[in-house]
Image 1 (cartoon, rainbow, N blue to C red):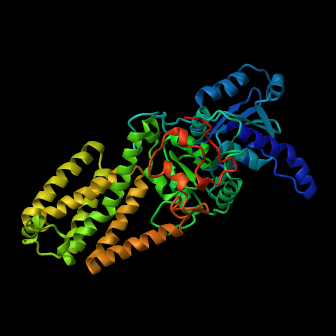
Image 2: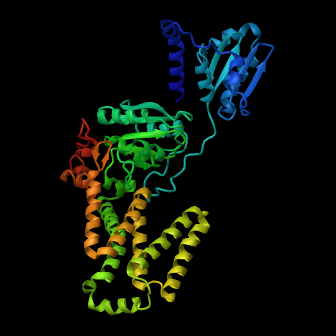
Image 3: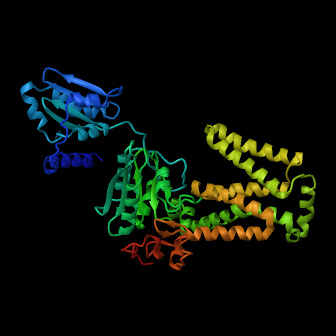
Amino acid sequence: MFQWLKHMIGRRLQSSGSETGAADVKPERPTLKHIIEEFEKCADLCHRSYPEIEVDLVYFPHLAGADDFDREVVQPLSNVSKDEVKALLARSEYIESTDKKAVVKAILEGWCAVFHGRSTYVVNVYNPETRAVEQSETETIIVGPHDAFVESLSVNLSLIRRRLKSSQLKIERLSVGEVAKTDVCICYIDGIANQDYVEDMIERIKNIEVDAIHDGNMLIQHIDDSPNSLFPLFMTSERVDAAVSKLVAGRIIGVMDHSPSVISAPSAFFDFFSSPDDYYQRWPLATAVRLLRLVSFVITILMTSLYVSITTYHYEMIPEALLTTLTESRSRVPFPPVYEALLMETTVELLREAGARLPTKIGQTIGIVGGIVIGQASVQAGFTSNVLIISVALSAIASFVIPSYVMSASIRLVRFGLILLAGLWGNFGLILGLTLFVIHLSGLKSLKGAYLRPIAPFRFTDWKDVFVRGPFYLFKQRPSIARSPNPTRNRMRK
């Protein structure tokens, strides 16, 4: 980040004379008075003066590193005489500026502006306090690396570079937000990533015209193909190993300053059911776990709606041994099954949201005690049946198995729609809802890539890393959704 900013400032300052000469317009020359006026009423701005050598400093202390500022600026200026200042400022770390806008931008980026006579210089002292690299709290794994991204763009890029030591890793820097001007870096591997995808993603980000974007999840909503869809079209992750694996697979990564998660595209629906630790375990175990997630997906969207459909219209589908128990359980319930199911599902969502918003220890207590107490009390009061409590509990537990929180939330919302359709038309309504669900997924695109791949379009060779996690020697090709110009990724033999 520092080298890029230094390079851009240097290019701008070197070319400003020729560019403005061609246009007969000279940039406004920076002076101490102009800069102070520009940052009027900025209480956090620091103006430091050295009258004995006629030098003034302007910088933001909370953006500058104390050690860097002392080493690069304070100590050198404290040990020179008035006649030696020009020789000091001729060093490479001091960049002379003749453009007021460039100096203002440098100060906002954490640099220090040095004013001496009619000359103005900027020096890089940017090193703000950042959160230490820790493990992700939202994407926990059993085995594998535990380091996760933080809110510092430079730290996040360094974490990626540590794992991907290749000159083919390209990083293009953009800026979003007319007011905030937040940096966004597009990362891809040259020769592996599809260049059309790269250019498309860069163009979408350049076309954003908003005041500020604070997080990668906000950025996604401005650039995805179907902003009104329930389902996430870009994957987000706080894990470094997951981001690097996407790059190697031919995907594109977006890293945003102040955001602890990165975005990746193109993404398919079934990508949200894989976890990084699938690749750190033996493939039969990882395959079993992945299949379990897919079964959990079916349970999440169908369990409660099937209960409503069967108990409302299709009692003949209930086994005879269970029919008596179900009838006795529902004999005291005054509501139709659809109202009963919506009531309990809403209660579960309230408990889930309360547990997420409260402090960790209190949230766990609310989730466990609240679920037990409310469930037992509802059955005793006759508001619901025992069978529905079991159905709702299984649906809730199954939704937690899905690794992606965003996808899990989308599926839970779809479940409410299926419950309503099952309550209106029984199994026909349930099949109608599932049909609309599949049709909607088939029409979605992620960076112009088919969202339901490898089912639509059908690509059987991709199944070995979608519905199962096959052995590594079978991973000969990169995912077809990446449309990589270099599809071969593994030449290993069994």
